[in-house]
Length: 458
Image (cartoon, rainbow, N blue to C red):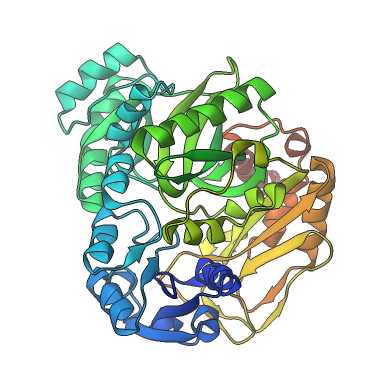
């Protein structure tokens, strides 16, 4: 691998460029009209204009991306996360052009990207799955019959969904009758596939994911990440290791993830996501992400392994050089996702010009970002502007360091979520790791009700 096209933007494009440079690989960035002066475009060895600002006309244009890679002399393409990273057709198009796709091959992406098929594969590998249906359906009568067998409440999920989209919790048959047609229609529009499947809804659950690396023949895990603190199914804070599971669950879950990788001959970096029932301690596989994750840095900080460099080495044909016994965990890491949003206005995105930036520093503080004075936060893409990742010898130290670093993170010109994140990290229930996947939204609702009631009292 000599020259790499990064088919993405923002902080992940910057992150990939840096890892490639460390390995002596030249980089080619792509940029839409909105990003032609962005950081990832400025620091790459070359930049190719990819099209107008809307993602459908630039970062989601498979033909334009493949053409850019070939015309700029690249021999490989890294998709990053989001956009086309889990689109099997994109991986196939890259391979058909004679280029290396930095990720699993199209067949594996197709297999694991379909959540129904992924559940089936997990079952074949002896990996526990949430009780539910094994086939997707667009038929309401079939869904009602299946829900009666699974038992309410159920979680209604799009078979081709991702990123927390296409999910509904249904308490009874009346709700299912109302929600199913709407959800199926939305899934068809969003993913081109209206099939839905049903899972038992675990009321008090943690969202824990296991990082894996595979070379097609062998696979290892890099332990787990805690990702339960979510708003509208989008992660807000991630940490590693998970503070809410036992050592036995940790070991069994990690081994299950490796079994699944070996079952499909997984190649490159990936993440197996699980629900852990807080009441019983049971864990259930829910899906696999066949790409690098937004939260990969927390795993890097506790293991000392560069995951993006590992992706590139595996894609270049290097056999897996790590044995499981080589991978150990040290300390605790926390990642805070910083978005250009206004928490006081319902997290309304706030695009605009960045007037001033001060990024935090000091021991064991890492900032992955594209922010620079004078740069623009475009209104066309995700509002993530940076990730603040800290390491500590224990969880308490990591929390204090995260709060200190958030206080140093200054962005003028657009609203950000730094204050909200500091408040979240200050909650006693967070310090005690007493939370589940619904805790953040319940806390936000309680705060909104409290504010509303104060207004009434006045």
